[in-house]
Length: 467
Image 1 (spheres, helix red, strand yellow):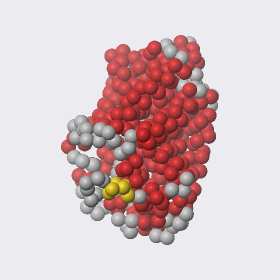
Image 2: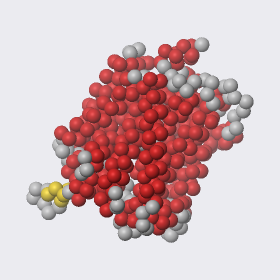
Image 3: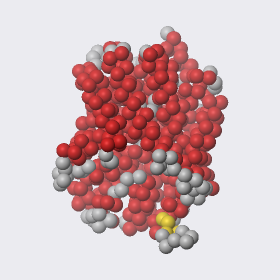
Image 4: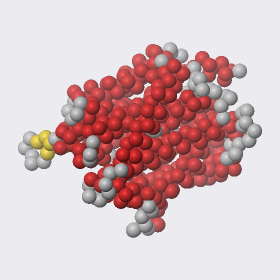
């Protein structure tokens, strides 16, 4: 009764499709659009795709199911949820609250960059964005349009602010009236856009070679060492792709209706998420492969792929201005659905911990997001020469959360459920109103053995070798 009362007072999703689309929207973000295609191209094409798919339906399914089950059973935000599961593991709730609080600001900074490009392409300036060069005083080197943009202070700050405000709109209106309604509109639009652009890309001359490069396994130079790095990369991508170990799924799970099937919902989320990631690869890999003359190095990681390479590709392809505009609208929508879930997770913590209203909590989170996010903006402009541990501020936030905090949280969550409270804790929630838990055996093996091993692999890989 206490759980139902608490969940009702906090709001909740009004339908199963609303929950699935909101959770899928959280999972579908920038990691799907540029990181997944890059990793697939780097790690043997079809080899990476096959390994990732296996991990998505096992590793990803297990961790997502666990987090949503914890959220739905406790009906609380991450701090309260982990405390209710086992007081000895209360610190995990704090870690799960800190992670999205650190990711949200720099994610919104990158979202501001995407918003800038969407604005540029919408105004018809796509070609200028791809070829513009800016001289550096006292040097022969020239900056690209992107490098010049992030090197300024006012414009990146402005688009960062706008992106934060756009994110906050859905959160202000609550779960059902805000997040659910926005997700029901944005996710179908996003899916239509990504299918349309991918189909167009595949009609381009020479797309077949790029498609083969993306889909067919490439065993050239594929040693046992590279296989291990591929496995580690596929595991790590799941964090980006499925919003695992960010506190998000625990939060969204706390808003999930009891009568909705937990197991089938998770399967639907991972299918939607994996489909979008795969389609993103169909857009990016063949297009870049065609217009770079088959140069696979053009599929570089990081901002360079999305903000430097792809604008050049759009400038070179037929109807590139239209396709580029559609693409950056797509990426903006994907970034927004993910940032909304990050902000909601932090807002839920503030509401519950300090017993504040949603509107007041939103204002507090917005102020904190702007304050912390400005550090990342300054890290590319006024403070460009300042580095910590050899990394710029945004990179430091990204590395510490994605390479350290998230794997630690996922590992200890496996220990909590697998050995401390036992898997029965999750199984009982999955079985609520259901006749059977179809993946019970798989779940037990994964949560107790495979997932912890994968977490250790992800944790040590960045420190022993570069992917």
